[in-house]
Length: 113
Image (tube, rainbow, N blue to C red; front, side, top):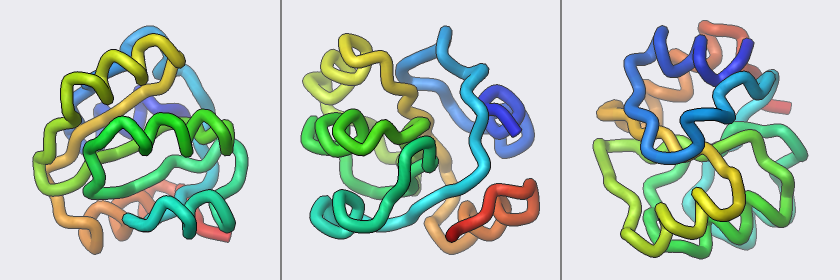
């Protein structure tokens, strides 16, 4: 499933990377700890988090993640948006809580490990 399908089916808001939504997503990872994501997320994963600071972009780029979904309608900080645009990283926003969002992603075929 690609990001545009996920955006449409889950009614996500695209904050950055509107031209990068053709990325194929098969797995996801949910965590709010940078060190956990660095240690355990895999290339191409879709990262679900509540963090909004620019370090999420650095971690996502370092791990070659497919994108980031922010939960609870959280808006990324301005410098996070700028960095994500410069790095070519999609940031999406959901009004759902993490538990519901991850369940819905799983129903769509996005698995964990």
